[in-house]
Amino acid sequence: MTHSPPERISTGVPGLDEILHSGIIPERSYLVRGDPGTGKTILGMKYLTAGVEAGETVLFVNLEESADDIRDNAATLDIDLSDVHFLDLSPDSDVFVDEQSYDIFSPSEVEQEPLTTAITDRVEAIEPDRVFIDPLTKLRHLTSDEYQFRKQVIAFMRYLKEQGATILLTSESTPDSPDNDLQYMTDGTIQLERSEMGRIISVPKFRGSSIREGNHSMRIGTDGLAVYPELTPNGADREYVAEPIPSGVTEIDNLLHGGIERGTITVLSGPTGVGKTTAGTQFMKEAASRGERSVMYMFEESRETFMRRNRAIDIPVGDMIEQGSLKVEEVEPLDHSAMEFAREVRREVEENDTDIVMIDGLQGYKLSVRGENDEMLVRKLHTLSRYLKNTGVSVILVDEIQSVTGEFQATEAGISYLADNIIFLRHLEISGEMRKAIGVLKKRTSDFERTLREFRITDHGLEVGEPLTGLRGVLSGAPEWVESESALDDG
Figure: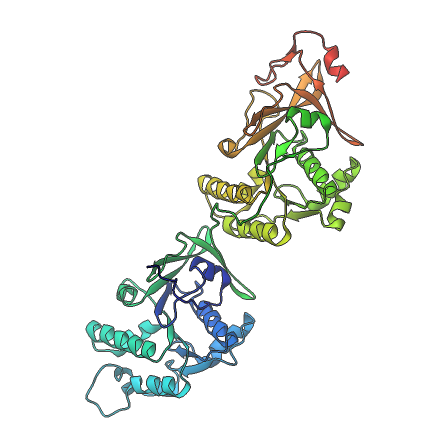
């Protein structure tokens, strides 16, 4: 017998819903924990406004900030709380106007109206579908001991669930007063943190269903809170034919025995100024002629410089952008986490049916995508590239080698294992003159030409010569002719 997955409701944060496989389970309780300033209250606001948008009745039980302060803070984030009901139990409210109010949450024999009555009256009056309590740990100070606190919390949450409410609550955990007990008493835990990687969100506990585990990126901006789930290698369902994608330059396509295959990962490797970006752009130019769309993410060069340089060599990137067959995105340094960047690439591919994604270049990616070590960034680049490959997107990664001449090195980013194709470009010093050469080091899906060809960037685009069969020692950094130097000039 198979069981259908439990019904879900939105948290109000699409990325978090994705981590939770479409949201949280109704009529359960969830703890949001984290240090001050990590975004717990903002998450609660989004949770309540999502309920309002769904036509539900929602209640904000505030025990720290006043309702007016909460509304003012929400307005700065463009969050409208006008349809949210409040039960204001903050210290300066009428509920806590005198010191006697601070002991009424515990079961006592006094004749005062207990705090529980204030809550139950409000709940029964509006019958909320969603309740957000911020922070529940304030009630710890209103009970006589830890046992009474736990007993009251369990009874409180059970009461709300019996009323048909789904509960989100926050905690303030300190070394002297940890919130471990709340983690056991609730059905799920959402953890918010700040680290060198930026803001992080994770779900260490979620009863009743699997979730996407791991640490995910989060950002608090002027429009509230955004979550960027860590990408998984599995791509979307997208049919494609693993056919060769030509560059449009006959000699390059001869080197590759027709081109790079669709749905493969290609590394363009070489030192600065050798023409890696131009070679990658050539594949996108040819794709545009077939009516396909490409996107280039530039980590090292400005968009303006890229446009000006391509105009000078007669590659019509301006027309391609205007026609919608090319998008050039300049990535600002230290402005994204790796997960935010992956999310942006995924959105581009899925919304615009993009065929080629080019990342230029990998060293800039490692410097610009903030807060993670090289090993972690390579892992995330691996995941992104595998995801794109599985959707049938052709990926071009531009990797700059530091040495201009000398001993050959395929890549410096540690991603050669990931590449289906490695195309390398080299500077050559021949008879006191600097030249360039292009070759193929690796091609998984077919055979390739194992020779070098001279590579030139001219006013009319790329020109590639005949195989340099008389040249040896290029990969060792000491090229020399074994036949006649005229072969280079003939190319």
